[in-house]
Length: 447
Ligand SMILES: *Cc1c(COP(=O)(O)O)cnc(C)c1O
Image (cartoon, rainbow, N blue to C red):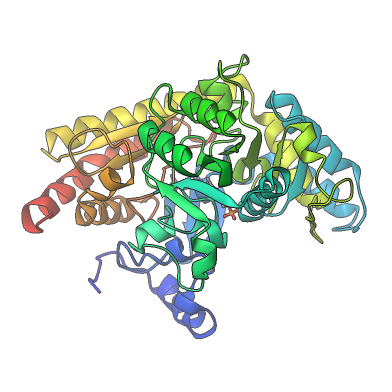
């Protein structure tokens, strides 16, 4: 593997310990730096917009724990809420008030969500939503889009985004053929393909699941009218529409991508039946949710026949963190996230253009990413047709200058309310040298 100039001895030592006890030395694959090379940084602390690694180097963090840290690291209101909750005990295995309050906050924010069930990860949320949709419709086929990631649910790993995209895997070993056969994978932003699939097998389809605005193949927003079209087609065939807002929920607006795209009125053709949430709503702790139409949610145990459960679901400390985080997610916060994204995307565009680097910066609310290629990216095939070595060169230049980007060309970048002008200026100052490194990679490595 290529040696990088600022390799980190303390992180390297931790990596060697980790490799002895954990496959790849990591507990989630993309963290391993396999796609960009070099030593993954082991972080020891986070404060506001910054992370500090084991070698004592500070980085402006543009990963924000892959989305949850929307207020920055160690926000005092969240710290207080966590400390207060933990002082009362860690887990009761009974209902408790915090989980009710978090459920109320979600229902208040996202109009079509009438009821929610809390779980501990986004994967659990999508897995449970799929089971519920199958229970409700009595059908088994699920439709998903290539490049969308919905957690590591067996039936949803086919042509998935995130780590599956980062490592260029078609799907995952260990998923039975029978299960993969229950999934239809279509190109994103292609309503004709959706029409055709439903025309052929509509009566067998339980649900179509989509990332509300995909961020796991890089940022690829739905074209105008696409989500509306999904609603129209699924409704016409009696299938449920599941909007996966694990990444976009409470990130793109107070009511997530739904609030940004559909507004309070919803789509003319109606709202999605079910939503999944995670990331921001846990404030950095394991809390996630699925919810939607009350008549569908009424099928869940103990009311209905679809079983779903969790020892730590609605954990009082995690839900306190999530609620305190959402309480800080005000219109002012979203305005600031927008300003930071404006400044960074403008800087990226300016300096990559100046260096003659083919690129397109795409955005959904304050989420954005850069594809190292010319022309808009509308689906996974177009996302894959980028120059990955140019991304790796750009990434390592930024890292060596103290900016922590996602170590993958197929992930969204995230900002927080703690990214003040000092942090933004540090990122902007690093971009020209990184743009030159990307230009050099284009010149020396065939795409
Ligand atoms: C992160 C993510 C998931 C999975 O959530 P985990 O908490 O990692 O299991 C599911 N869907 C989308 C859209 C995500 O971004």
